[in-house]
Image (cartoon, rainbow, N blue to C red; front, side, top):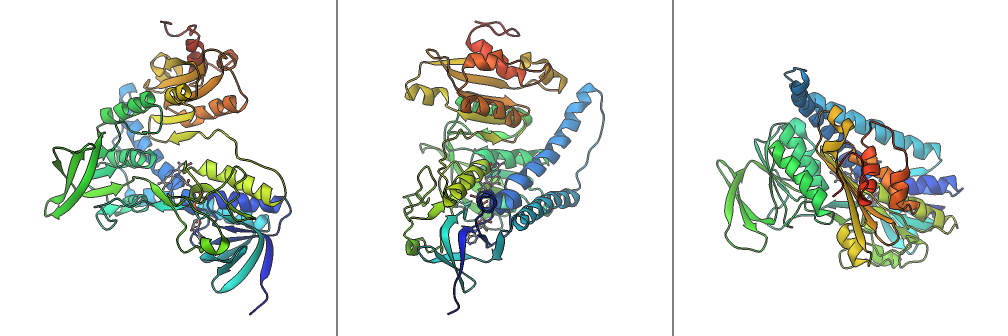
Length: 464
Ligand SMILES: Cc1cc2nc3c(=O)[nH]c(=O)nc-3n(C[C@H](O)[C@H](O)[C@H](O)COP(=O)(O)OP(=O)(O)OC[C@H]3O[C@@H](n4cnc5c(N)ncnc54)[C@H](O)[C@@H]3O)c2cc1C
């Protein structure tokens, strides 16, 4: 057998986690090999964050033209789906090309192929063996299937749903009220589908702040999307006039039939570890299939790290990116740990974003919870933007005034949440947020006002 090529660091996967790990490793002087079985950039750039955000932007532009009639701008917009798809792909290509260029510019060697462990710190790709002083597993995740709804021509996963150029179904059922289901639900609704979205739990975005989640649901319903919470899909039958789906209350009971043309299953994702040969490396997975890691992103096998979707929820790109940096720094002999606030964003319009503890989580953690709220109906900036739907909510501790969490529903919530995240990282009090001079008129003033409202001294709303 040929002598094995050895590297300081081998990274399996070039999604957000993997390419961050590879680049940081190279920046720290390591000789890095990255292996990619599919497209450089992973799910986020190719079939996740980027293409969905591009479609949402197009759908929102279309929607805004309709709203704009209210202030005198008249248009009869039409959508050229082929052109839209070409633009979506051009955005993806530009970014994935950028990542490939960055890997090259940082002297990261890239091998195309599916990597599997051949030994503790040894991998095999296309019949070749490579050894690494450290290995970072960043293989990501794939759509989870739902019992009774096997993926196929009529039952879509999120990757298939991106292909709007293949036609917009007249009637679409979206199963799952998480970020992916909500975003696609709005894309298709705005491109002309009749959309029904069902969620098993009592509210959409079930793991988060129910008040702002409910406001997002109401905004989507107002737009014409039918949202059914506390509902499950148990099966379907294909008939001449469409797919007859049986829906039931989550607790069981009287079923009903909904007829649609396509179904998008967006009930979650599962870590991609199949065929990786983790057992050969001594890497343990938990009962849900995620690779077990500690705060340094180390697995049960010395010198082997795991990051991103394959390691643990939340399955978010920016979390994977930071974990990649932590793992690479540790592989380079530094002492890094993941101990960060992770914001999450839903890019519907209005957007939804949250960071830190919900009221309920804060109570459970033993804080004396106090909440400040500022409705965007009182925001001058929101009005000048043609809409005033939304709420900014600040969760704090009454005794110490410590800021604990921030939840936003409204335009640009995803941009506003960065300030809240920094505030949490800096250990800001609610007063710190309220004392920061925010430019006027901006949506960000709402954060300041919500903080002031917590102390019953907001200016643009009555403090009751
Ligand atoms: C529709 C959709 C929209 C999303 N939108 C957002 C968003 O707006 N914001 C956000 O934060 N997150 C979003 N996400 C989630 C985000 O895409 C993931 O959290 C992120 O991609 C995880 O990065 P990762 O590096 O862990 O893995 P991935 O991006 O999944 O990348 C893993 C890579 O590893 C490769 N690979 C797997 N196994 C092997 C192997 N054995 N050998 C070699 N290569 C291998 C794969 O081909 C892939 O390229 C979205 C996801 C979806 C599906």
